[in-house]
Length: 160
Image (cartoon, rainbow, N blue to C red; front, top):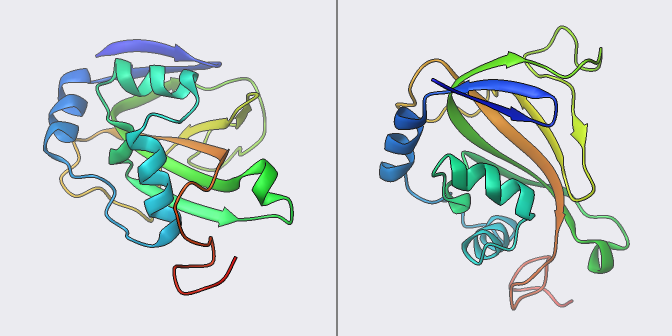
């Protein structure tokens, strides 16, 4: 296990198990417009550099997220972007959480709010990555991403 410190979290990561899983894993496979938008951005590496640095260090391709969800878009989404929540599962465990009572009593640590995204570590129970090594935890981020598809955000059959 290799220890890493990310924004107040300390984690122990089984790098080999994580690398082996993602080497075989496919890209996020939901084909809704919001997920295809994320995939296009991830493949072009148009995610925050600090996030890409964590994923790169663990040999996790950004497009191989284990959960992607566009939460909602606000009235100013064209300027601000669409709010996404994205997770990547990691073999290992969270050793230490940042000092905070937020999320106490849940499988999640407290959120760390950074200029380009919020990061939280814990364990997602609703999205189980088939065959993922145990123990494991989820690197979960919330961030605004621009719409880059050549179709309306409401869907290909709608008008902008």
